[in-house]
Amino acid sequence: MLSVLCLLTLFLIGMPILIFGSYGIILLYFDKSGEKKSDEESGEFEPKVSIVIPTHNEEVIISKKFDNMLHLNYPMEKFEIIFVDDSTDSTPQIIEEYSKKFPFIHLIRSRERMGYSPSMIAGCKAAENEIIIFAEAGSFMDSQAIRNLVRHFRKPNIGLVTGKSIILNVGEQVGDTERSYLEIADFLRRAESRMDSTFWVKGEATAVRKELIEDLEECDATFDNTSALIVRQKGYKAIYDPHVKFYEYAPKDYNDYSKQKTIRAANWIKMLLRFRKMFFRRKYGLFGCITLPMQFLMLAIVPITLFVGFLSLITLTFFDVTFSLPIWSIIGAILLMSLLFDRKIPIILLEFEYVLLKALYQVVFTRTEHDKIDKAISTRTCAVK
Image (cartoon, rainbow, N blue to C red; front, top):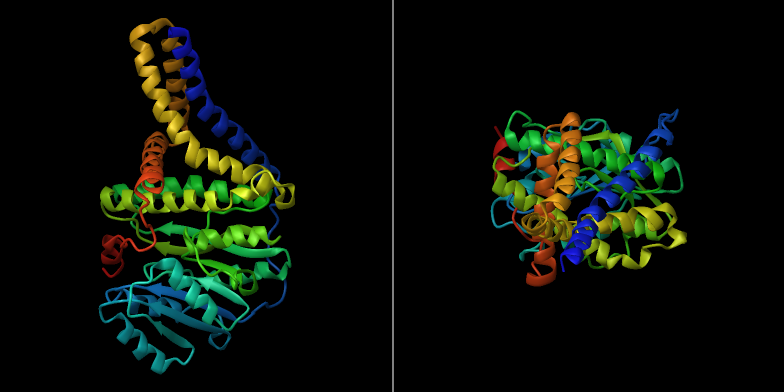
């Protein structure tokens, strides 16, 4: 019985190390050997764009959002802004006032709560231009964001481009943690883009070819991430560009932060389950053969094996210290090495695994809906100060 427990512990603890280690080596290879030349092209490239922004009770922040959108470095005659609103406050009235001054601002009004994905689908269907840009009421685009997004569409194989989040409240504990987390996520997205495609899409600043998503009628995960999978499924690439910048605030407290991360993780898991038929399919390139299976293992399998593995290791320690001590030593060495890079990495990893377990529980057992959960109010409060 003890030998079985020893083998089980080795397997459960070793599997996450193998998965993270092998994928990390693959990504490092593509990140170092990938194309690093600038994507800048000579000459102007200014296709018409439609910016879609879902809103729900944004009266506190909406005027600041307008100020940001109206000062982007892009010809106003070449874009339209579509707000899809299901608010119960004065948000739609504020939007209507702006639409009277600026004819390129449009409002789609719903009397019932729609949620993020249905709102985005409605807005994209109403869009008149060839390139659709996803935006969000509580984040603010860099003045060059649209230009840096659309320049990639000169290449016919690019279907979607996503950008980089800059955290504004980095002096706060949650803000510092989120910045460190995003540094890891940005490495993943950059390396995955150089390898093939990424599905880590930030809906606060993302552009997509309208023709690729106009048949999307429903979405059981988040619309932005699902769009990346749809684009790759149709033979185009979804890429990350760190020059596409937008600014946002991390939640002020860990309750909001944990809720935000759980929603995101649950939607990733739902999305991967929906597109599981793309796994190990050569027609989807390295994205289908490596990225999607590895992401599924990291997001859905590793949290379970780590949790059960540590329970098994703790149990084993009481029965066989000689066998368990080297395993604890290896775990300690890995944590020490991660501390040399960034002292927050162990905390971020532990928090993320906890969030994934929580998300898995909600997806599998409680069937929680993650599209209509309210935003972190503290991020809006920060933005208007």
